[in-house]
Image 1 (cartoon, rainbow, N blue to C red):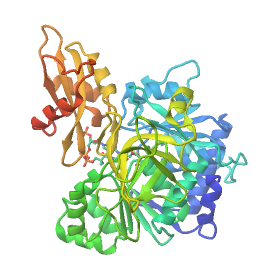
Image 2 (image 1 turned 120 degrees about the horizontal axis):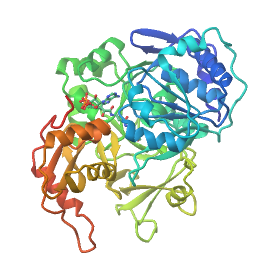
Image 3 (image 1 turned 90 degrees about the vertical axis):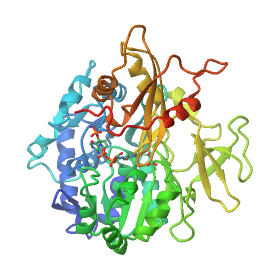
Length: 508
Ligand code: MLC
């Protein structure tokens, strides 16, 4: 299904209802519709056509949403970029996606501009000029409507090989996901969503933005999650639904008990995903807020797959059961055969939510799917005899920090470019708030000394802040097994023995 048509179900007859609150201002459904149409008109005049990519390197904002609406109306492919990414992380994404146009803001453009290169330089727009760009343009919806199988977005995952891969998500992928979540979590136009997640990832974009427009409820969007003000946002908006990563729930547990009780009184549903929710967090949250957080499991490539039930037991430590229309199989990682209950297998996924493949990367697409069309998630899980899935490990060395995915190889490559570093291995060590944080084990080049702060600052200058190692551990050599592979398990134990110094290496 086309997303514009899907959103129309909630728009019709409700044009004057407030759809969105952002930075103290209210916007109706009609306003968003008109703004999206005007913007689409302008982009079409500037030569953007169906299938062209539209890069967006912006913080959460009304303009971000308007750009998304304009893109889907024109059949453009939306390419959101993580605002925490630095030039060297943006550059390969732009080179791969080859956007026809990119939107950014005055605050962010210094990081973006050096990343723009190539024979066909994209048109660059500053979001501050948006209203000037669209002025009194046509408020009619453009006619270039897309079918369900048309790509709606390319969302870049952190690359296992140090380079990002672009997951192509279609209109139908997003539509199936939104319909599923609305059904499974009983969302209606009476709900109110407080959204503090970034819109550049599928948690905020696929779950937040799409369920909001599909169900037609009111959303308060925050520029970002801030622990200092999140309690006040809850109390003044009085939402019924909140989607968060476990780090956000840890932060919510820091609020005074009286505030937690009050929030618990008007909230209907707290959902957690993007990283494992510790059972202890779930239990403490229940004590303070009187709610059992509903944990679910998804991925950029598949959107949402499994969810604990809305009614029925939300089992701590599990990610629940398959969502409607999603087929899950657990396969032995070596033989590929289906495993028995309680045995560990790789999670394989098939359904209308699953992406068709990686952008311009047939090889990666081919190896990502089984012969019968199941996506290989790379996550290992067990299934209980009554159908609850529990994730137990990852096949890769992925680190999840505050809900952001980090592949060690990318940081290792950067570290190895530094003159004082001869060898580097980055591992994820446990952290009570972020889940995991990256810790780097390094072997110094001959005659070099380690200045932890200087190296940390260089990392922060060139990599997203969540990727900067929290600690550098100096080693004479990296432990390797008989095959010459770095023994990451041993490094992890070593990293955990060191107290992670909070704020170490922060940019000042
Ligand atoms: C974090 N930072 C941001 C930011 N989020 N900066 C700008 N915009 C944002 N949106 C920076 C801060 O400036 C700071 O940098 C550092 O990150 C830590 O911030 P903090 O204030 O100390 O935050 P904290 O309380 O630790 O919370 C972090 C967080 C963040 C939870 C807000 O980790 C976050 O937004 N996580 C969500 C990730 C996400 O959406 N994942 C979904 C992936 S999709 P500095 O320089 O001061 O250190 C997926 C599929 C699925 O996985 O199933 O969902």
